[in-house]
Amino acid sequence: MNFARTIYLTDTVAIARLIEPAAKALGFDLVRVAMIGGTTDPTLQVMAERPDTRQLSIDDCAELSRKVSDILDAEEEAGRDPISEAYRLEVSSPGIDRPLTRPADYADWAGHEARLRYAEPVDGAKQVSGIIEGIEGGTIRVTTPKGERQVAFANIASAKLMLTDKLIHATAPLSIEGVDTIEADPHPGDEVNAIASKEG
Image 1: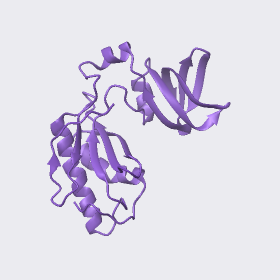
Image 2: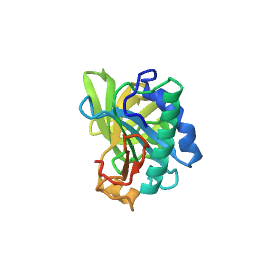
Image 3: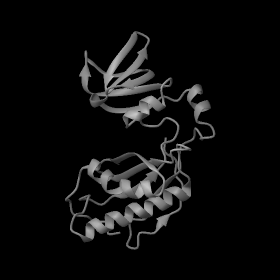
């Protein structure tokens, strides 16, 4: 894969649409597609999981990484390069204190503690932490020490589960040390480095 790219598609939502069919074909659900690392270490992060285990193995990460690389290569050859700058491709599973990115996540993880950061402040607050009670009609219910809060899914900038004993028990045998990650070699030929790193 050519490490230098010309920009046409910068929206990670659009990139997710490009790669989601390939992930589905492998039996994986996309959890998040994001650019991380800032200007010093720009990284396209593709986070996915098996619906039954809520995680990926190293082999799963490697296989998805190859598929994603092939798709990005095809876009480049067609003159529709998704990312303008040099970057790394990172494929990982969510881990225990996973991000909550889809409405269904708030139903699946009801009863667990989470921190939700608002896109726009609500009553002067930038975030809310508490126990997820569920979601209905695009509104998430969160129980806090001050009572129940209702949060519009559309107003969530980011959210993640909080690491608790209850969550560790519910996600066993996941390791609390992190998740498997595969990083694609940015040099021509695009070989996948089968090296697991730890993502907190």
